[in-house]
Amino acid sequence: MGLEHYIKDLLYRYNCVIVPGFGAFLTQEKSAIIQEGTNTFYPPTKTVSFNQQLVSNDGLLVSYAAEAQNISFEEMLKQTKEEVAEWEAVLQKGEYLKLSEIGSLSTNAEGKIQFQPIGSVNYLTSSFGMTSFVSAPVTREILKTEVSEMEEKMPITFTPEKREGLGVRPYLKYAAVVLLALTAGFAGYKYYQTDQANQQLAREEAQELVSKRIQEATFFDTKPLELPAITLKTSKKTTATKVESGQKVHHIIAGAFRYRTNADRKIAQLKNQGYNPSYIGTNPFGLYMVAYDSFTDTDKALVALREIKLTQKDAWLKSVK
Image 1 (cartoon, rainbow, N blue to C red):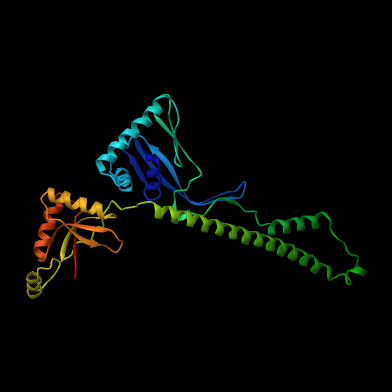
Image 2 (cartoon, rainbow, N blue to C red):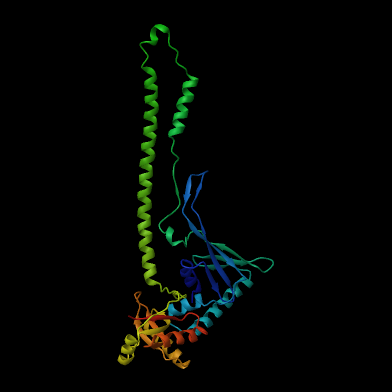
């Protein structure tokens, strides 16, 4: 099944991806650094680690894989358990379990799982296109110091009768220092411009690759948008008009789905649970929205919302003007 491919996709968006019954892959942001010894610049990254204690199924990985394969949650959970059993068999043999673009796992003498992340993948989306590079240090002050040291080692003396004719020489000394500094600065600036152009080209190529991968992947947000509590004030005249017209403008949302087939499956599930669900179209993001029930009366909608939230914490009210 290739469960590691789904883990890799989720690591770009989440800081914790739990593999049920096996453990969790965690990410932590690391700031950009400069290695002074080699003058190497490293961009911000996300470091990946593994925690063997987090094994409870939070539904994120299984739901994402089920959505991508267009199968049920239960079937995907079954496949996940089977692949986890294969992983554990490899580790029990004392072999390395290599997960593509994530890292490798092995067991130590105490039976604990050890994880070695791969260093070639940066899961921090804001750093795409940014790679490590070496920048030569600016040598303006170094050249000025070398010139001063040379002057101290080779001083120039003037006799009284010649000093007047050579009074312009100190200016030539400072002019030489300025010329050296300008030359070094121009060379450093040209190197910087060339390096920036190379980085921009690499950033554009990486961005095109990421855009293509994001378009091919299926992403969804498991946490619904929680709106603050509001008080709706409607006049009796307006409410009566809506009731007479039979237009249901208050919807208690059960979820939003990328595919219409999943929305239809959710409607059938809610009907079996005793609700009066319906499909109410798509939201601005193109997701198909399903409601537990719909109402014309505001008060009835709020009462029903409170009852549903006793068991369904993610339910929320959408009112159409």
